[in-house]
Length: 219
Image 1 (tube, helix red, strand yellow):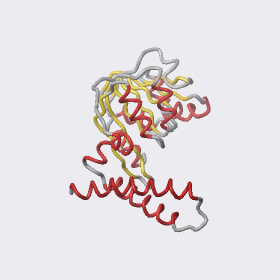
Image 2 (cartoon, rainbow, N blue to C red; image 1 turned 120 degrees about the vertical axis):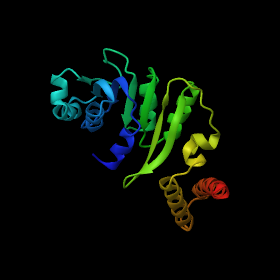
Image 3 (cartoon, helix red, strand yellow; image 1 turned 180 degrees about the horizontal axis):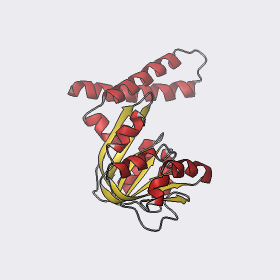
Image 4 (cartoon, helix red, strand yellow; image 1 turned 60 degrees about the horizontal axis):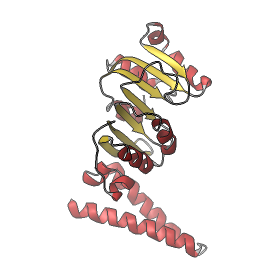
């Protein structure tokens, strides 16, 4: 299991039913079952070929009736609503599309991009977010954990960057935005940039500098 998976699994709650959507090899579902974090689990993928990898890993659990594989789009095809949904490794827009059909009581989400769109969607739907931060495992990842009810309130900056990253910034988040700042400054040094692109890069750099200045001011 990778460090990324370990971090995600550390936020899995103890529930009756867990649905791992886009389950890939099924490692996190196996972790949940092995550690008593769910009584039964569903591994789901739209691709039968991808799902077969999880079925192989979870062969014993499936035979024991503790795990069920469902070849379907998102949460469709599950015989019961899960208590918690795990969606890791998908784009934020795809996560929003899946959850727009119904948000389980608890969720653990790790969008690969467009995490801001996931946050905005959850907030519009009255969700409570209990963890929202950036971590690293060779790459940077965003993790969003919460409940279907709770009515969390976010500022625009918190939607864009993650609430916990601003209130209690991780080293991974700071390294991520400072690298982006360096990349933006290097890009702005190019004489070939169009006026439109230069203005867009400057706007983004100014936004990041505001964030780091605010964080540094609190430390």
